[in-house]
Amino acid sequence: IGSGSSFGKGITSSSKLSCEGRSAGGLLIGASLNQHPELWRAAILGVPFVDVTCTMIDATIPLTVAEWEEWGNPNEEKFFDYIKSYCPINNIKDGAVYPSCLITGGLHDPRVQYWEPAKFAAELRHRASKNTGPIVLKMDMDSGHFSASDRYKYLQELAYEYAFLLDTLGHF
Image (cartoon, rainbow, N blue to C red; front, side, top):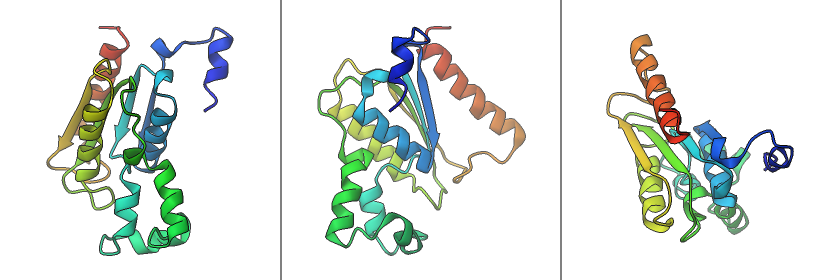
């Protein structure tokens, strides 16, 4: 994680830093939070692919088998061990202080099923330190992987995320 070099130069500090990722980018954010939860004050994980091991092992889930070429087939031990080594839900640090997190999902998402963000939020709440910032789970009961298709609903979702960031970073 390269953001540590910015701290030494006085450009920013962890109290002013946030991160965001969606889908596989949410996997990156989840893995980064597990490696260095102290680097950020806030994180937004949009429809995050955070239960990689369980999802990729299930050949009945749409798109899974086609992804084995890129990700590896976790039904083979070498790929299972590798995927588990970075899978966010499998690597939450017990007792670590995590930043405030906004985790979103969509009930009708065919790519990242709604239970992935829900399970990740529950695991963070259970295993992280009591000093961890709020872990907010926002599940949209009408949307899929790409959130709102309606322009106004999209702007509402964006405003919610900005409000979360501004509140967490102390700008409200």
